[in-house]
Amino acid sequence: DQQVKQNSPSLSVQEGRISILNCDYTNSMFDYFLWYKKYPAEGPTFLISISSIKDKNEDGRFTVFLNKSAKHLSLHIVPSQPGDSAVYFCAAGDNQGGKLIFGQGTELSVKP
Amino acid sequence: GAGVSQSPRYKVAKRGQDVALRCDPISGHVSLFWYQQALGQGPEFLTYFQNEAQLDKSGLPSDRFFAERPEGSVSTLKIQRTQQEDSAVYLCASSLAMTQGAGGGYTFGSGTRLTVV
Image (cartoon, rainbow over all chains, first blue to last red):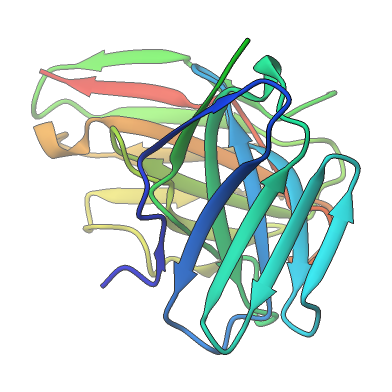
């Protein structure tokens, strides 16, 4: 049973435009959500997070939106740059420990 | 060190062979995690240490998998009698905090790619 789902395996965007990556979850008990970015042959690197009591968190070009009623979160990248091309994972966790549940990932390709 | 270091980077094992994967976390990091990432999938949780105590091993897929962190720093993930389905990238991560929270996430190593033939 996949508690965190990323239904789009890939996304292609033109440089300078907005990239929107989506993630759905089933467990309403998650306390926080995170986005990680992964380049080939490297480990995932932390990008941005949001607490379940918030609905938006912004960090530079990256904004994460949380819609708890829909159990949906999204990552917006504006403007998209070719260096943003990578696999993006959403993840969720609770305050009981450090375990994270990851989605399957979405491969973003930003074309010049 | 500056980051989480994992060794070896690549490991090819014959089916039935035992393997040991090493993780050197960031110095001073309390929490250490092991994840398994199959091709085309997200990382899946295996086990979690707080200092030398293994607090959660619910993700270990079978009793062939064993992890330890005897002195609260370096950790080893051991897989006995490897099977083809064990082929994956094994990721280690560490965190300064005891619990994750919505803070800064934790730091992953580059992983060990295990191929069982």
